[in-house]
Image 1: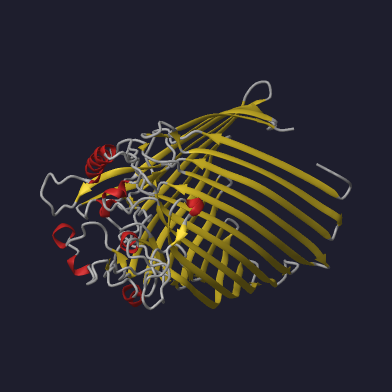
Image 2: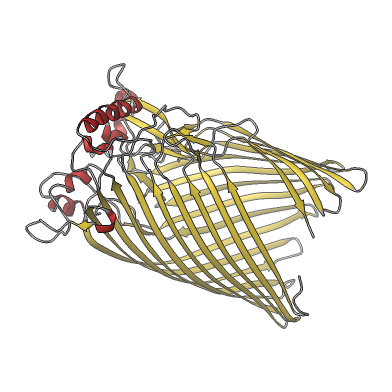
Length: 635
């Protein structure tokens, strides 16, 4: 509302709390529990017709307890004899044997709530939680200079994040992962926009952004860890990583629209970007309680490698983790990305277009890879233990070239149909790959192609009744991807992939494969009905259906990690005042209780704990069927 003749304001507050849809088999808690609070304040100042300024400040907290993840597959290698136990059976037997031995020796027992390896929204877990805090400020200023508009956008963002993750995703106490991240960013953009309606319309501008990231995390092996069975030294130890990254970016951009005629337009645009990044990363092993932990000293006779201890290095080496002194990197990227679009108004209700666009995603530094990037350094400084651990520190930029042709058309006063075909080529496509044990490495695939056909339509069937539909066909192919991670048990007699497996046995040639999360066909259908009722009331009903073909969700492209085709049904039925002043509505989402995987892969350490004979797979799931009653009052 108004604060003065030239100043107005708005304040908004949100609080949301929800219980989870999983039952923790160890604690009995519902997970994941979520709590969210947001406060947003806005001011608008309009001292005259030429100047308008909008300021927004927002602070938010997002916290959750537990996870929406479970072990849903437990298998043995297909080339082993029938009856070879899977991961869940081996884990249960190992915990039982360990607790018998530890109990007899008076040592701490291993907590365990059982693993059923079935997709039934039951999970094990030990004290998972996340805390997130953020602050955002944005100032937008528009100033009229004659018929031109000068615009400024100033932004500032700060967030902090902490997580305690039971990232083996089982109820057995194996290891805990901790992460702490702090990020701050400032940006400034200036734009000048021409009056419009001329034969040449244009916009030009400049952009600057700087940000700082401080990150540290730890993989902790608690005193009561199951890993004590592998080696008694696996108790009350941890490996910690410290990383920093700074980025400075500036860009200039412009776009010109040439109105060739009343029905044809040629749009030319371009952006030149330069970005400088620097990063450092250190990995250190520690022992003792966190409050009094001590980093291990160097024992390498050369003195070149700090923090390598005979007792701990091979232990964490089994996790594909190694200690190393600070490594540093810097990179500068310069890129020009053009855009060309031609639009033609076929008639009063149809517009056809064709476009050509180039884009890029900057390269950077992988601060969460668990190994040193230099393989010779790894082996030379590992005291002859022969551990072949190779990590990633720097990855390259990704480039894309896209072509699109489409038609947007109306059909009378009651319908419209839009259709588009696109084709995109990627070079150095950035991918995240599981290292087969515990971590992920960001690498670049050589090349990929993606093409598709998309269509959407809206039809006013009758007064108050509207049908909306959309569909898309998608084709994706890696045209050059020779370094994808080998998935579990990938052998010629089982998967017929012998000609694709590289000599290192760690990576394989995935050229010709389809990327994860690329269903071939997706579609949606929505029916909205609005009907006036007696006494100034109105009925508002929306029913929608969303369909997706099956797809692989594992970056290793493991054929066992497939999301089956699914259909989601949602409904909203509301009754309220015709002027929108108030409403009471019933909302139902995912009415048929479909299980939809949002992410998944091999359970960390499951292959290592079973000696490579078995594997467990985890899945993060979207929410199940949910129902709500919603009340709205506007004043």
